[in-house]
Length: 422
Figure 1 (cartoon, helix red, strand yellow):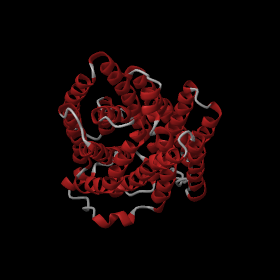
Figure 2 (cartoon, rainbow, N blue to C red):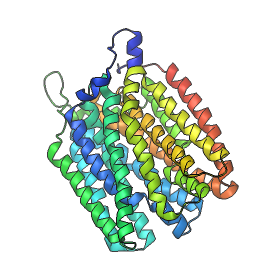
Figure 3 (cartoon, rainbow, N blue to C red):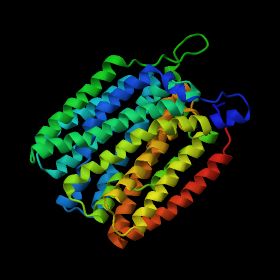
Figure 4 (cartoon, helix red, strand yellow):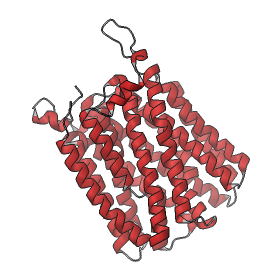
């Protein structure tokens, strides 16, 4: 029997209400992994924050071309390898080793950027490989967090990790902006500095984080060899997790990608391309500020209400993009703040919901299934929105996604409230 959500336990009067001081109870390994993600995200966002503007504004790719590229390296690469990495981590019961490989692959990509210069085709290939590293490392890392966390603290622990992760996302674009402000053509300086931060993040994981204790049977023998693809597949067909995975796919499909949101904001505000990375900074700032409060609220009042509230905030952002013809600096700031709050209320909470439903011996695979479906949804979203923008214009595209978001969130609320554990 899978664990019930905290809200369901409360109905049965078998759960204690979490306290705000529970942040102090977060396991040390969560903070260490947060340090790894903090440093790695500084590295990653130094490169990624300028990419949409570079491809669309300088290389003049069409929205459909950019959407296809965005879907491939942000969605498909994660989807293809997350499940494989999760199954391998569960079979070996060494999620740290899989995560180290993923982080190391992304670090090497920063050096490869030095070799290809301005050949944009090669740059896209390297960025895809970098995101492949992300697909490999994400599920094992999240599994380590969940396996070192008591069920009532899951949302809080993931919120702490995501807050540190968002701090790196905030600083990365600032570092890149500062380097390019000082050296306008010094992209090599950006790549080298990015590599240095990636190596530091990898070192924190390698030195300070240990693999969780192996799962054993009643006689104390390791059960890692008993984990099969069939065991993993069965997770997807078990009650509430099956519904959660379907809802994650549905909701990610109606979520406009970061790059398109920022391109829409730049178009409405008329800002220069040089300030494009700063959009990432503001979003990450609000993500970091609201991540822990969102996690505490999820553990206190229920994870589903917080998740749905996050998508409600995203709907408000869509309405602003649709109804306001021109945006000043304050309006842009409000939009970016809403985007950050959306991420704070959904990313860690969704992973916490999945972690509460999957037994420890296949925890990594369960999280990987969720990441795979979210990746597929992002890929579909990017290609579909790019095609609609190119064919029908931005306003029609945003209106369509706004309407489908309302429908998808309503369906998710109905499904998840009615789902049973079995």
